[in-house]
Length: 189
Ligand SMILES: CC(C)(COP(=O)(O)OP(=O)(O)OC[C@H]1O[C@@H](n2cnc3c(N)ncnc32)[C@H](O)[C@@H]1OP(=O)(O)O)[C@@H](O)C(=O)NCCC(=O)NCCS
Image 1 (cartoon, protein in one colour):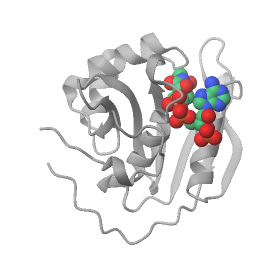
Image 2: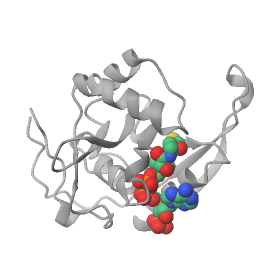
Image 3: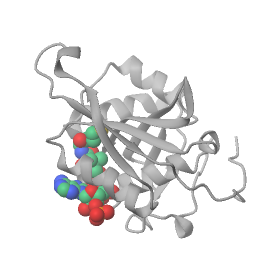
Image 4: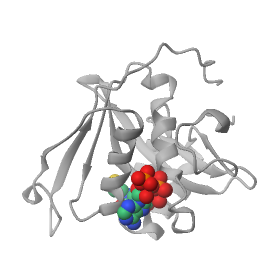
């Protein structure tokens, strides 16, 4: 099953047009996502099993960016709806392969996440970001600007919650997002 989630001609984030397409993951994608995290730096690698779960149980929100020609994984956004607040999509991890950075791939992934069927009721996007991660900060600021949505920072998770030396994670909350009535075709399964 290959699910194409987005029409490149209508995506909001413009720079990744052409050679990139977004799709839902399958459990077999977990290996490549795990590898991308390990090789890309900047993200805390989890176990291979965690990425298989992400690509299976969270496949309705987790979204991949792949090379439109050879299918190679270029990036992913691992995300879920917060169980107690299903109007909120939480971005757990977003990563882009080094060779594909700076081309709008991550921006397109966030837009593709918002366009998923499971996110029809989403009005807020949340993520935690380490203050030193300029690329990540700018990614979410840029998303808020593109969607003309309020952007707020607050205390997220303190270093004391983590083992070892882990930078604090500030919480970003974007929204409410203005969701236009949806005339898109349903995702095919
Ligand atoms: C953060 C990351 C996902 C961004 O991916 P990307 O595809 O290069 O991002 P985009 O090209 O969509 O750029 C998004 C915005 O961030 C800006 N940006 C990208 N890299 C940047 C950097 N190194 N420094 C400052 N701003 C940066 C872009 O200019 C763009 O802003 P704009 O819309 O105002 O032009 C990527 O750098 C990455 O995988 N980093 C390692 C993993 C990580 O830190 N993930 C985030 C933590 S959850």
